[in-house]
Length: 101
Image (cartoon, rainbow, N blue to C red; front, top):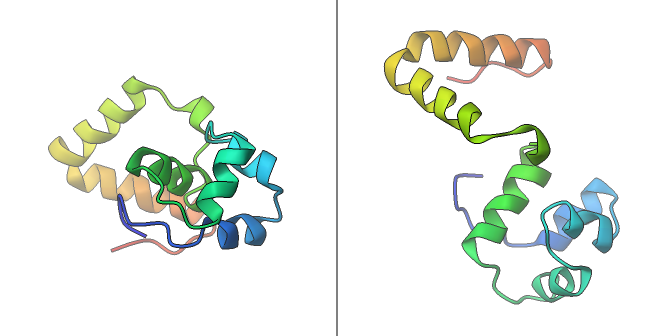
């Protein structure tokens, strides 16, 4: 799922994770009632959709990320793409995931 890809079925994602609405939506700062409306088909704003993707699809713990982390990632990607790729592959190997191209 790419950056800002439309989340077509948040209820399906929630059910696959085995979470109730309150726990699922609370992790991204949305009330249970607001999340229920999104699950019923109301369009999600892009920021909510992106938070859902980061937290529930990519598994990012937002409480551990800060602006400096994002700046370092951007710097590495731009200035040192080979180092970035090696680090990314090392993390994937540690997590048991296959390296990406």
